[in-house]
Image (cartoon, rainbow, N blue to C red; front, side, top):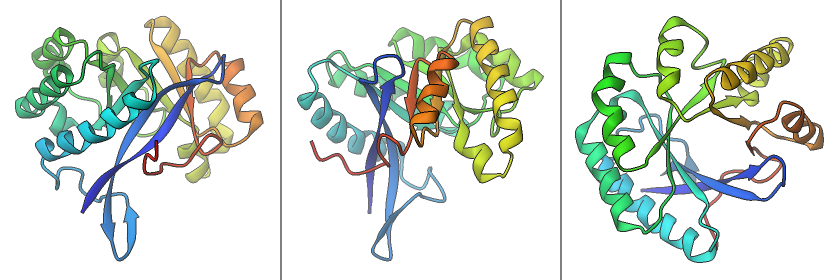
Length: 218
């Protein structure tokens, strides 16, 4: 059994809701857990589940918040996935859809597929910059195609790399400015992290300070 949990994304300047990230969960031994394989559930079923969640969210929020979905590289480059997302965009009026890429695609893959996403106003965000997607020539080449990057502070903490956090955050903030990208700071856990997000001029923030991923209750 699968379902989407939601985690709010907050405008760093106003501290008001900006959107939601939909995070797939599977039911295992009486618990909802992060799946080990995100491709185990076919994309058409994932989109069907997300449609239910998104319509519930937008019914309760007339300000039309952004909705983010995660895709790995295999899913991003699958034409069937793109078709399912286009159908989702057409099915939900004025849907502001963001695809968060958990893996950096190859430059030639972006050249092949990005126009399809752009044609239907689906924004692209590169997830976990600095850790899962560190600075390298391959990442540098694809940044002009991105709309946003997400810096995950919790990854540095989990990997016991706290000394690297601020230098890396500073570097990626400059990279976002260089490429004119939106900047999301994830891993907000307390008021000092909120202040840090404002200091580094993050556009949106996300983390347990606001809410853990939970089933959407309306």
